[in-house]
Image 1 (tube, rainbow, N blue to C red):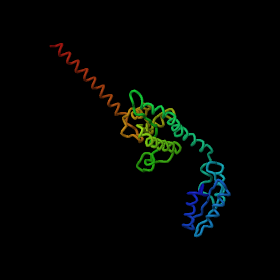
Image 2: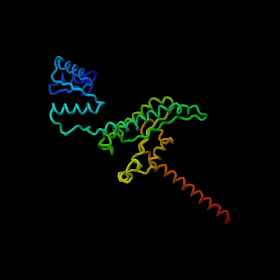
Image 3: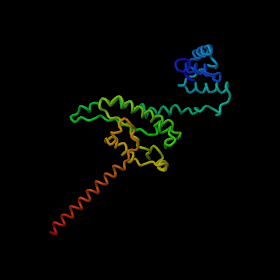
Image 4: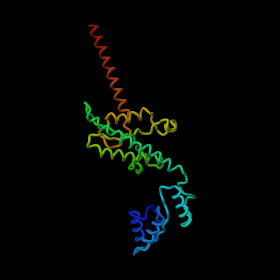
Length: 269
């Protein structure tokens, strides 16, 4: 239990130790001495039933996590897996890079340009400032937990976690700025075949062309989804706009035909 030498972690450990003798708490603490002191206090608590062992653990250090794993493996038997699941030293770096790109960078960009967006309200033709975060429904917690959802499957942890964080960021900006006249949305372009992926492989999984993804995001920017402000607009169907354009062309064609017929009638007369 990381960070259990004080605060909520400490109280959680105490609760379990008082509840049943079946609990043995491995109390992790950055400072081994503070952890040992907390473990001693817990073990001497009146009415305690369980047991506790302290160990040094700094969850921001991969080497500390590995050392804790080796200690627990040695003192508490062999785990199901032969080694810690975090042996890949690139895991932390990869996850940090994705979060930095998809979440932190979006935050910095938004905060930097907010003053300019706010100025748009004082233009000669005032307009509502609009912020659109390009997100993804794979970051939806409700859909990820729904067995009937197409997003109910493990994998792509880094990307999905980053989009879940971005969705929360979008909601927070909407709550913060809606009283100032801002329109804040998330837009999900869906699975799109881009240069970032193997185009042919993702097309087999139903990926759409880039122009389709672009239309989905553009529909939110244009204001077509303003009824869904403060939400992630999932796959705003581009064929609706294509159909409208097609109908407009057909109407022009019909009108031109009618004009031709009228001129022909007039000529015959």
